[in-house]
Image 1 (tube, rainbow, N blue to C red):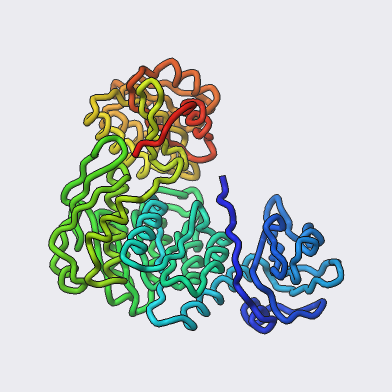
Image 2 (cartoon, rainbow, N blue to C red):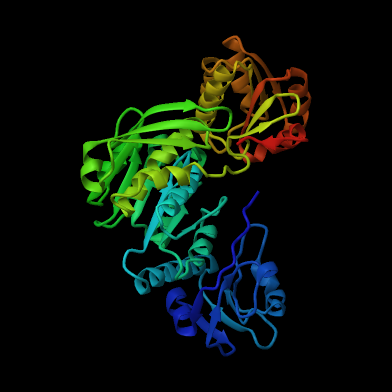
Length: 488
């Protein structure tokens, strides 16, 4: 499900609009606009309406509705008849023009405010959304006023709309930059012009369009490659692709984190009940010297598994880079209050004592294996039987079969007792897991999988649900969670 596009009050004079977009005023008179919108349902009086063109939607068909809602001007890529009183600015491409407006507003925010305003960009094949949320929480905890993206607003539409929400009340922006094809990370970075860049992981994701995992590495590596010399690169060095691109960055300052090494090393990670983890971080000499951190940092996180620990490590480095000598106790207190997002490894207790780990938002091999590991740790700690409901992983191209088989092997290694694989090439997961002794079955879609889930579940089981969004495993979650309560 797409995240709602936020509204904004970004002001632009006519001159600023024309300079930023390279557009031409082709109709009407205009002194300026207050706020930019792509959705007639949320337009406010005085807004600029941007008529975006997509595969199934053409904003040009809604110009009259935009005018009736109060828009005083529209950005178009072809001339249209509109009601009197609406000015038209024609550009070559309205999506590119929207990006240009987001970049122009970001630059104005950085230049006109007090010194020290910064933008943090985060990307990765897995973990970027959690890292974005944890980083925003960490920065708020150490006294910074944060503007952050939410949901899946990490593409060519979402990024500029998030940037347009920057205001004088913000000290720092934290934005997620996503990709599904080549060049999207570089483009997103050209809009946000990040001062600090974070890469969480490089793995097989969107390889159907991008290519090999090494190609994914170069796509994600644009986050580091586009940093200025006075910027800061922060990367997970447990991943060799991230490590390689970290060392290639033009940024003079770079810091690393990980479980196996790095400037900030995760030395302890263990579940604390069903809704939290305890994490210990060892601070390397370079971080202690440059950012005035203590030798050890202890955290309690309302997050599960390795993904939460890695996100906390990245967030700690970013916070220290922006606030050298930060109050570690304040940081820990802030991170202890993070709220999880629905569909992202969130634990729910069912009436019969079963625990559901809802990670149905999306999936690739790296994220599925991490979630299986987290579920396995919890199941062992609680003495519960582990059941996995795993959907097909999309957009993998030629790598699809081997990636699904690898997940099947991970099911065996994680001690999955019963597996329901759902749709398409998830059959490879079931076959591989069955070969390793797991009670496994395959369902052609989420609706038919519900019957298999009901048949195989026992009261008190721990159930992991994870798959690509298009598989629709959230339907299984909804079926199981009436009634339920989030675990704290």
